Image (cartoon, rainbow, N blue to C red; front, top):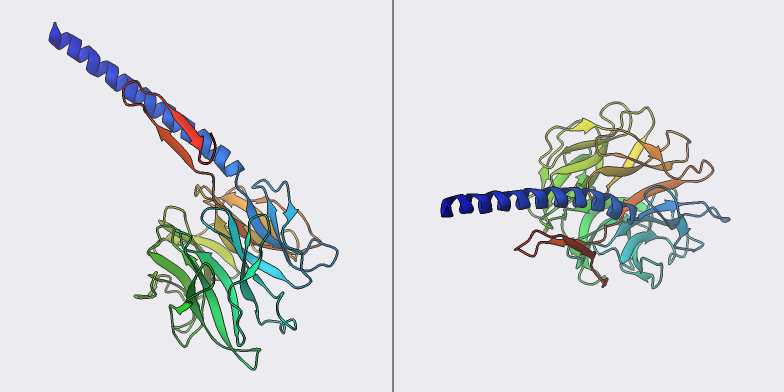
Length: 343
């Protein structure tokens, strides 16, 4: 009698556990879609009366486009903070003159996500800064810093890291080659970057303190612009190894590189969605100036979000998703969830 009762209890427990797992799975799937819809993509565009480069935001479906910056000199290459509250970007706004064509003589700025309180973090004189990336704890910013001769001739570039207030910049790569376009891994352990230190452009991964740089592409083509997947397992990057600039995805150790765009146009500047299911990028496939697209992480179903053939739309950066908590009361399987910061 007691044995039969115990078997029924165990069977009921497994049923509750299985039902809870199923409900959680369905809930998280729908929640992931809802969270993705609540994210934003920052990008650079010239869609204004002055036709200068500014930072804009839009929803992941291309709707609700709104302008963030408004300066007579260019703002571009936005990058989200991990909490979604701030954006770093490159700007010419404090320069006395616009740099010569081909020289990115910008500086790294940070502003709130609503565009308030823009602050120059680098304030360099004989250097040019570009391409920033946040540490996952939000305490540091890595960026490209290039040494210039006479204010315009590129000598070399390195990856630096600084505090979020611009203090204590440290040269992480300290190499006489060109080291550029850093991207901090979501777990905080590594920084991927591009470099020509082996004679052509490759993707390298180093420890977050700059030690142990490893060439993970090892290909005679030009490989650049790495972007980590949210789970640290893959890296998206650009390469011309198939004859034109395409977006590839490889494992984090450099194995199994796959061309996911495979288009005769130039596809560039990949940015993963926070759930890892999609990738934003820019391309000139529909017009020569460039548009922002979103595709599935395997390259299928590319969609033009900006559809603005008269302007440049480039450098997408996909912002983080709201945080969700899920739990059970431990006795009877139940489910609750809320976005942090709400009651």
